[in-house]
Each structure stands twice: as C-alpha cells, then as structure tokens.
Image (cartoon, rainbow, N blue to C red; front, side, top):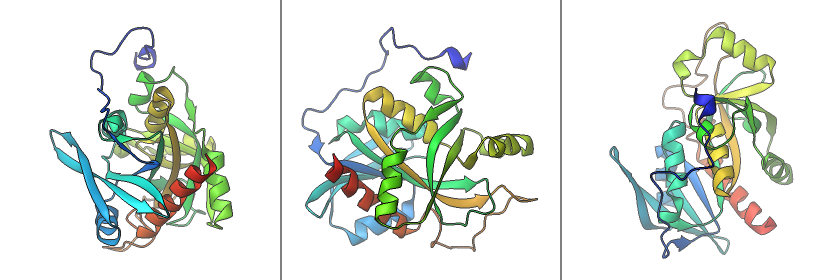
Amino acid sequence: MITDSFDDRSPAKINVKKNENAVRVDAVIFTFSQEIEKFVTEQYHCEKVGEYATAGGAHPVYVLQYNGKRFGFCKTWVGAPACVGPIEELSTVLDTDKIIHFGGAGCLNKEIARGKVMIPTEAYRDEGTSYHYAPASDYIRIKNHDIVKAFMEEKRIPYILGKTWTTDAFYRETVSNFEKHKADGCISVEMEGAAVQAVCDFRGLDVYMFFTSGDLLDAPEWTDRKEKSQIEHTQHDPGHFDIALALAEYVVNKA
C-alpha cells in the first residue's frame, strides 16, 4: 500500500551529493511559469550559477540581488515528483534552507476571485510522493502559513486562508471528490503542495507557500475564468513574483 511507503529506518539507494562549493543565497524562489522566468531574467540582473537537469532538459538556476540580499531563482516542474526533484537537488547548486513556493491553483469556492492570494494551512495528500517523506495521514500541516499570513497583513495584500487539495490527477477531480474536499474546508486544488511540505520537513528546510486563485470548480461546469493570452490575475502574473520576492526578504529579515 502507498500509505505504508514511509521508511526512515533504512538508507535510500540513490542520494544527492552536496556540492561543497554551492552558492550561498538567503533563500530560493521557485516558479512554475515560463512567463515569470522571462520577466525576472529581463527585469533583474540575474547571474546563472548552475542548472537542474532531467531527461526532458535542463533548467538554469540564477542568483539575483535585492535590497542587499541574494536570492536563488529557478523554474521548476509541474506535479509532485517533478517539483520535489529540484528541492532534493537544491544543495548541488545552492546553499540555503529557505524556499518560497508559489504558483497557480484551482479554486473550490466561487466567492474567491481569480487572482486572489490563497494561503494553504493544510494539504490533503491525494498524491504519492509525500508518503515517502512523512508517515501516512490525510493532511500534512503547512507549518509556516502563519508567517506568510503575517507578511500579507503587513504588506496589506488581500488573501484568504484555507486547506488545499493536492492531487496527482487533475482530470479525475470528480464532482464527488470536489464536494467532499470543499465540505472539508479546502479552498484550492493543485499538484505539489503536500509533497513540497513533506520533503522540506524531511530535509530540514523551511518552505513558505502561497497560491494564485485560478480556474473554478465551484460551478455547474468547470471554467477557466480568463481570456485567451491573459496574464494579469493568473499564475503568470509578474505581480505575484513581486509578492514572492518581498516574502523572501521578509522571512530572511525575520530569521
């Protein structure tokens, strides 16, 4: 059973070798968006310091300076196993213990507008990766959500708190499952949150997480709630990178 997969008594067969010359940064910001990656590399002075490589290709890793701090920046991959890979391999390129994780998420409540910041408090584990990093449970606690909440309040950024539903199978978000998770307090659905929190807990990393409210499940028919080629109020909105960058500075200054 997948729920029996957590094993902290025997060593892993494949292990990441830490790079003793990894570049020290105050925090790293991961994005899923090629549009945000393009924005950041054009608007900030970014130094390429390495890359994360897979059979599907390599993604460059950058360092940028902001208000006297050094932050790593990289585009990650969609889906729990793919997103966990760069976190596991973090120490091969960068030296840090703080991760800013943000991206788009489906919305389970029609009262939440597209583009609204959603802060997850717990993640329902409807994926497989997290069960290899934490003992089985329905939910995993997003342990730094209170810090993200405090940041949003200090910066006067509107947000909403709630549970999230992390799933591997977005084409199997059935009516019954939607209704069950909404009734349980979930306001969002995405593919990485539970696994990201689990691997960070296991590896002793601090992750700070927020989502951009996107497509809507809470309607008679699913709706994307955006126009063709729309950027504003989507997961590709550069304004949400600005939030992530300010959050990175905030958590470093509070440390």
